[in-house]
Length: 289
Image (cartoon, rainbow, N blue to C red):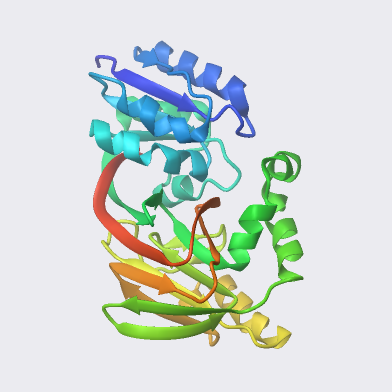
């Protein structure tokens, strides 16, 4: 099988860092591919570096979900498939799509993978794959620094969550969609593009290629209200929890009297007011055949 012309972008600040980039390049070249490694100093430069390439067959991106999000515009501009090297902390998109975690196995998908067309979403023009949220997880994203991720790995999420919970207050949010106008007093509102997010939350009725967004609002008035939500998460029936309200639509507009922060796939994205929309069949990702 003839080799392909591949653009390789690896987040040097990911937990496995520069060594993973060198190993990925060696692996791809060993498989007969021509590898181009653009100079990228900041995450915001990733899409620009990708879009500047010509005559490319595949874009290979190594890092966590934040790095993948930064590549969306560039990959769409080239119109070629994306191959994922899971090098982040949670790697939610890779888990959703069944991407193998061993580096050599992930690199092999450049030659052997099947292209799966998936949706992407955006909030105020900030792209995301998995979810965007307001409330608890926004504070978690701000507390979960790169240094914390490097030190604690997967434990950084529960540590940051416990710290955020201590100062959490309900947010008054107004949501407009095809279902009309709704008001929420919520500690956590999530707009998801995928069936899974947050490392533990799943909704079997949703999918990353269904052309829809799923909104979840968690309303906690006393500490006792936490337990039904945790039980629903453990049973993989999160949308059915007593304290969770759900809506499904292709877009949502969220407003408030306050300028609350919005996080998307673990990155600080924008502030309220916010427009959330899905882009159906946004790009192809190489997955196991």
